[in-house]
Length: 179
Image (cartoon, rainbow, N blue to C red; front, side, top):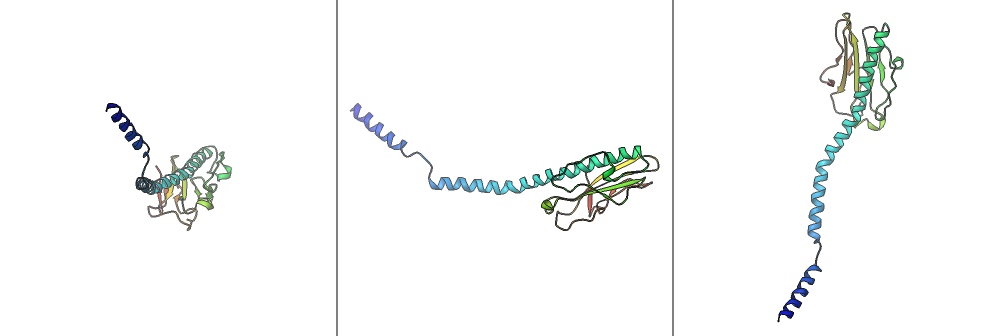
């Protein structure tokens, strides 16, 4: 009897091993869970991509501000972007543009998104100034409204310094300073 019992046990185990796998319902549940997780994570990921692209403008305008200060130390006035000793490489933004005419007390620059990224990333402005006391001020300002096809006018974001006032952002409704 012992050998018959062993034979039946082996046959029963072989039948169970042949039924390995997942049912269709189990697979559908897993696919649905993965879809829900992806739907939750995708907007967060896209927001981080936009922040990364915007870092290009912040970095470039910070470089322009520092170059403006160095240029002003060597010359009697701030310079245009073309006169500065910097070369900027941009991917997501147009090259920085000088706003107005730089003078002895202030200068302003603006960066707008490239045509492929107008609805995705914000515009940035930068301003520098030097008071009559010789104190430099510099600010980089970010568009306070959502990105859209309605581009801001260059000069809307920042205000260059004057003989008695530091460079500032235009106003909280339009621009906010970047720390």
